[in-house]
Amino acid sequence: MILRQLRDTDEDAEDAWEVVAAAFGDAAALAGKDGWPPGYIAEIHDRHRHLARTDPGGCWIALDDAGMPLGVALSARREGTWGLALLAVPPRAQRQGVGRELLAAALLYGRGCLRGIICGSEDPRAASTYRRAGFALHPAMRLRGTVGPETKERLSPPDGAVHEGVARHQDLLDSVDRRTRGGAHGADHELLLRQRRLLVVDDLAGSGYCYVSEDGKVELLAATSRRLAKRLLTAALLCLPEGTDARVAALTAEQQWAVDVGLEAGLELSTSGYVCLRGMPPPMPYIPSGTFL
Image (tube, rainbow, N blue to C red; front, side, top):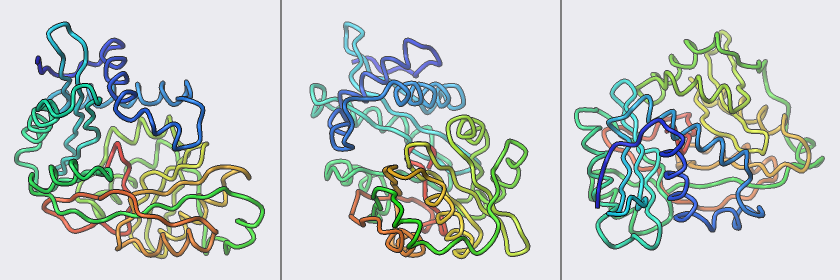
């Protein structure tokens, strides 16, 4: 097995995607989709290349002797906060130590960081691996449901102004990041602004933001108070077109404000993996991104 850094190239992005598609191929069926949409694949390519560019020392790919990809690990450091964005090994390469070597390389990149965060799956092997690496496992919940006319009838309107976010808001976003998770996302916001709709609150009561995708995923929400967080999540759900499959994942027990909004909107609540933390309590009010943590 050859272990090397993932490069910011089309070839390496395709190899990383091949690993992801093989490792998580059933996810498309579980999501009710007929295969992987081309737009989704392009988005993942952009994210992998972004991390390979910003954190080459934290992004690794494992290859067999013929140069075929066996696994991939992507991690990033942001102002003393380390995050594991991806650890994927397809079934054909599992139980061969590939994942262990990839995780060791990614963890080494985070050595010296005060804080660490991983959005872990329900896989018990992954959970035990992260626990052995020193992470506290916080069981996570997920909200999901179709947005319909009754959704908007159930939800009370936001209790204040919510604005469309633009690039000039990045200083505000980084400031909120530091208060909630201890480190700004920095360049990650530049990519997210291209891929997602950004909602922002900023008034005398505090500030906050969240990203929401066209297909209904609320990703990366941070605010200086639960009240503002509820305002943002409410606005995110209300802005979705009818028929959209709304999804809000990685909710720890500390995010009851999000559970309340989701249940009021008629979304279904279920358990879903773990938010794994090291050197930090669960950030709140905060909903992490699986990729940008």
